[in-house]
Length: 280
Image (cartoon, rainbow, N blue to C red; front, side, top):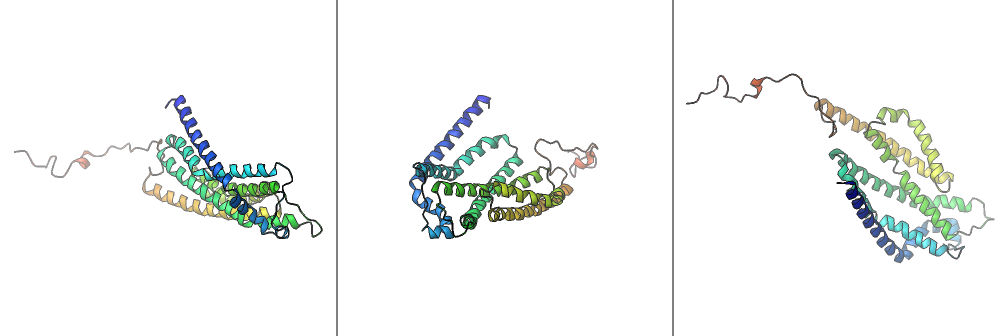
């Protein structure tokens, strides 16, 4: 395809993705009440939320419309994810080699699953960190929780946990391309743990000790899982290379040829040649 054809295809796929997101935003807009109740539930589970009868407050005139538009946009992007992810994959996949296409599908599936696990984990634990923030000042302080500030906090927590749980995908990719072998992963274990805790403290919206610990500990466990999987993969690769020297070659790599010519007798079928039957 020419450059103009690629640009046209990209424009078409971006248009389809934008249309799907817009349609899903409209759907989320009309499903606002159950979605808002779902997002508000972590606040209701806190002691401060129970004392306030699970009510959030709009401080500004524009808070309600801004919150509803923001939730509709985020919900539309998430709901339309199968469509725009397919469009991205369909645009990129033709440029990949056969082995790369196989790995791309696996990485995409793993990314979606880990993102869903991260957001689910955040939703189930966010009430603990929120309760810590709302009650740390003691009984003499009553917090008037703004609906805008609260939903900002919740959405940022969900996105932060979702993207943080993509860390194993990056580590596995670096291992598969040979940049981060198992020996290096094991040698850098302590430094990696420290980096994970520091990064978790930075990217969590509240930076409270409970929330970033809840994020960092599972990621450390996922790092150990990456080491285990990489060890098994490298062991299997060594076995394949021992039995088949061209098993690990990419599509654009040339295999080594045996410079020693084979004997012609090896290719002669049985019953033919010098001792074979003669024509009648």
